[in-house]
Length: 432
Image (cartoon, rainbow, N blue to C red; front, side, top):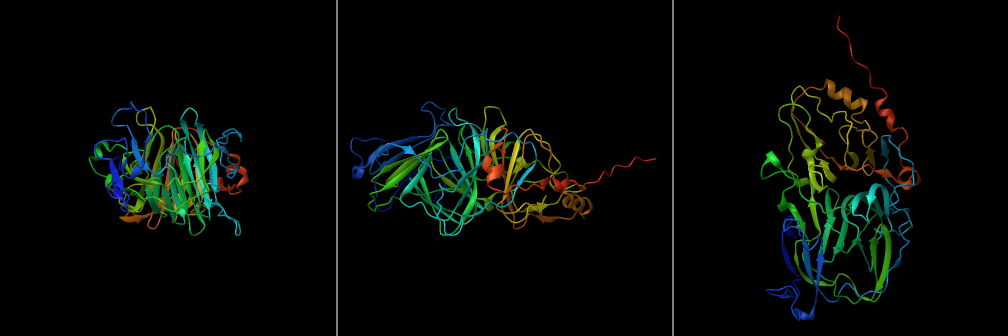
């Protein structure tokens, strides 16, 4: 892998040295008679700090394919936010199903949309999906014309081949596949996880402000694959495209994974969540969860995100005279949470790995009865929190609508979720 975030990388398949042109991007004849193709992730005139693009040197241009036709293999992958009436209740899903035994489901076929907002045509909004698959994407690839995918594996290891090279992404790791980059997911066993899709822009590292120059997710820990191409002949290859929220497929007689060399700063990447440097209070009070932000997709409003990716990793809790778990909260943001492994500290019962919760805008939420009573009486000694656990949150300034699959079809919604707060007592006493 190549190390760094937002860096300008150069990479050649080691089998073909000197395959990158020297001193220019588009020579009259490229080394090894390759084709030069630019992949732009921003407008040509975007400020230099935001300008992202990569030059690919490949065996055939991407334009060599038959016309796209509608793809109907992902029944529950949608952009329709008006399927269901609005639901302001606290929502919790039990672990989402893995594919049935005897059925072969690949990554694209196993995409299910849970909730979202906005419109990919206007490039504003996001979607939250679940993937559940047990088969590899043989002789096919997928790309998203509408935005970036942040993929969070929960069960099973993903072997991802991209135009830039190959990367392995295991539970407690994430990867980001930016808009337009073609990739295929291969699996050896039934696999499941979560996807955050953003339409507006690209994920960036959050500003650190008074934290200083170091901390949270450090740039050096992000990894980008090195150049690799498939040198086997292919005669029947499918390219699946997500365009304006719909899926299409085109056939071609060559693999999209034919890039021999590339250079640029518009790349796929992965990150190991165990390398996150945690910031926390060492005096009193529970800090806001923004201190756990790994990546953010900013909106045009300063300090307000289209989406933040936040984690709740193992850490020390040492606050004095403090209720240490998360506080009770009503938020102007939407909070979608998932659990990769372990047991979440504020709700150890009911919120299971592979499941999810959604606390919509201004919907009250917080610790359940067991957590509140235990933390209110606990002896406040230094202790490890969330050991063996990794929960995460997709937080958004947009109000998220739940799909029919998310609310009905999946049959995973926990109708009794609200009960976890019903036994909280009124402990207020008037002194005489």
